[in-house]
Amino acid sequence: MNVWECARIAVRALRVNKLRSALTMLGIIIGVGAVIAMVGVGAGAQASVAERIESLGTNLIVARSGSVTSSGVRLGQGTQFTLTEDDAAAVAREIRAVQVAAPNTKGKGQVVYGNLNWSTDIHGVTEEYLEARDWPLVAGRPLGPEDVDGATKVAVLGQTTALNLFGDADPLGQIIRIQKVPFTVIGLLDEKGQSADGWDQDDLILIPLSTAKKKVLGASQANPRSVRKIDIKIRSGEDMAEAEAQIRKLLRQRHRLQPDQDDDFKLQNLTQVLEAKEQAAQIMTYLLAAIASVSLLVGGIGIMNIMLVSVTERTREIGLRMAVGACSRDILVQFLIEAVTLSLIGGGVGIAAGLAGSRAISYFAEWPTLVVSETIALAFGFAAAIGIFFGFYPARKAARLDPIEALRYE
Image (cartoon, rainbow, N blue to C red; front, side):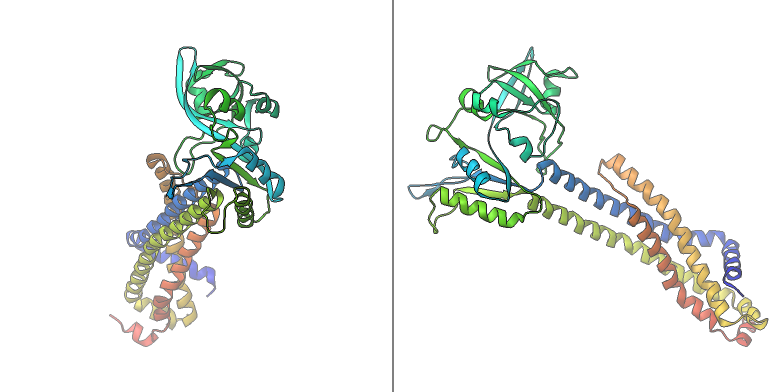
């Protein structure tokens, strides 16, 4: 008896008890569907984190003004602007791994256009800022060195700010007032979305750093060239940890800090932070997949149970087949094909259920989901393996029946 004949007999046997076969497949359907849906949720979370990493700018290290010690008392981070524009220039000049270093400062202010107004973040930046943050424009031009050197009153708007001030109208060339100072809109940033911390990156206005200090946000009286932070972009392929160590060493030298003194700045490797979050999301994906896989194991146990019942019910049939020439291998293959068929049909329906479940989760819960072909293939293959594993024992039991005793079975 060939394999195709065994398969035909197996399918016919399953069709005799359609309801029982359907209930047996239910465990596999739920298991495969749960695996696809849960892995889709986890993969969606990973993709979301990866998107946020890219939105911050690739290979980005942020140097922030840190705490200082005054009369033995340690002041909080950012209470003094300990970084300067000269620090940024030195970092870009002296560290080979650095592509650009963009000093910038930040404040909050009211922006007015006509009879509309909006409170937003105002960033004083240099021409290197957009390159450091990998932030393109969708219209207009970026800030140039002539704007920073000449302290011109020009502004580049984020998408959220532009929407609240201009709606669907074109903002380019329009005059807005920032803290009662008129500015001409020269550019519109591309949309970035939310950051890893949940704040809207598009709710901002970029103006020249010199203009921000002289006319809008003000400068430190102690050091007019001080800045709140420096965005440092590392060249592609360079070691981020090594670059961070070199930046720290250079800034400590420039700030004349002794070996026993703490840093008066803080370096933050945003890529490492968000990659750690991505790894956490990946671990959560594996955990969700493991939990969902329990359903597959339960479905496999159901298949084994039903196949054992089927062997018992068809003992006389097995004895008759052996009596007319079927060998043990034929009986083994027949029952194994029955178990695998249950698993494969259940796996196919489970894939459809999993895809539908992923779409439902994405639509109703508004969670990002991402189902890839590898996940579907893995879940389907696992379902087939479950059928073989849990179907082998009942099939082996059927194949080892004694023909004489089987024919006498009542």
